[in-house]
Length: 215
Image (cartoon, rainbow, N blue to C red; front, side, top):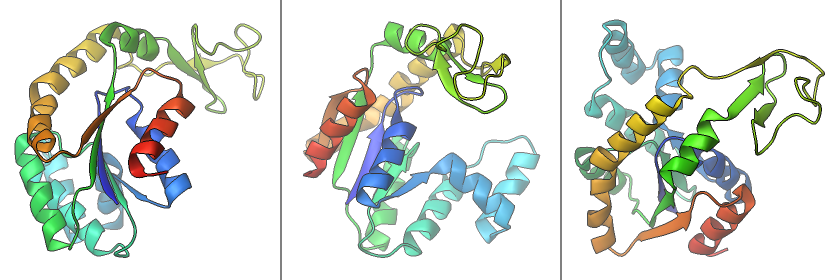
């Protein structure tokens, strides 16, 4: 089973990918994580990526494609893959088809996590974490039981990600609509796109995805 999880940043792709790994024994192929691991390990593609990043440039589609190709080649044939963060553009979608074909795989499902932009802004801008233990909280959805005190470790120090602000979230939504959403019609023509409510509770979204995958 090979699937793509689509949705703007903050839609819950990472959370749902982790659940699929646990429940179905699939491999999450997150381009960001794979790039960091390849650079750290000093693999051939990692060294190429490191040179590019040290110049302050964006890693090319070719490098990302080679990274994914190598990961798939090293996986057991029966292990399912979850593509998280790739493809983001029509060119990357074409590259993925070629990569899958080279590795004797087919794309089974494209699952889009649909979100309401205003609600997503509230979800992301309200989140924060304990600076000591990393426990996650939200201003309204999941505040600490005692205001200003971490439920897990009792610390009173908290932090927010600097990019968890409304301007950044709306810019990312705009980029998603402009670059990534246009790849959906091609997959829809193949009859493999399903949409789920990304604003639903995490367990509800997981149940919807499991139903799409056949339990």
